[in-house]
Length: 303
Image (cartoon, rainbow, N blue to C red; front, top):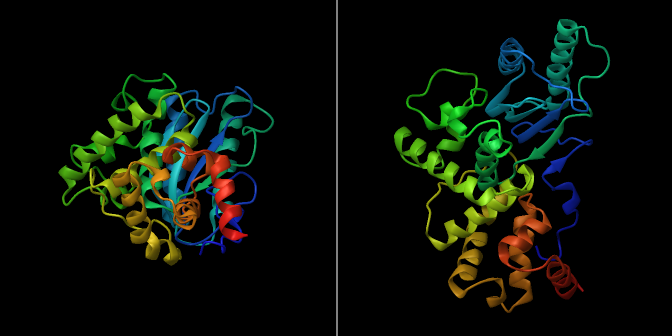
């Protein structure tokens, strides 16, 4: 495993142009308006966009896990059941662009680039992304609280009750407790915790670092999360979760990454986190080491 990280570039979570397209894959999709133009002007615009998402759920086997509609961009957390993500997202954004341009007499491209994709290979990263999607309006100043923002899926996660929707929070909530009320209470606690830790970091960076912190806290025994694999076909990640958690437990018990003197053990932890999609800078910050240290470990063990 240590010298076999043959192509980590193909396993990074972030994709701007070349998309990863696989049935069972969970992706965080973002799409921005061109320049400073708005994507939504009136309530009907947001309602129409959500109706299109519901159509995709019915017609194309797209399972929506969370969403947030901002003023000039959108966040969608979804799971594809077929190999159809690029075509389906193109369908969604093309239909909305035609609607928006027709309604407001606008010409030209509504979106500034192809949609962006962050693949969620790891359950704790998936949980982190959902938290930051729901906190996005607070972090940019559109609301004082996640519960004060209408255009996200927070109600499905926080209750009370679970209204019928094309958005299904259960794959994420099931990680957090034995019954619905306990899961929703736990999710609300994590929202508060994520907001404190997130600070001014950009969403993708904050979500990744918070995900690693959850791994460390899980290993230390301070939190209990029922780990599930969010992506089909990632058997290697499921099988190695116990080994990774054991290694992280040793780190937390002994006071940090420097307590692991064996370079191979240290590199194992780094590579396992990289295989789950975490970036090198996120890993370095969470483990209290430098990116240069990670580079030196790779040279020391593999050469």
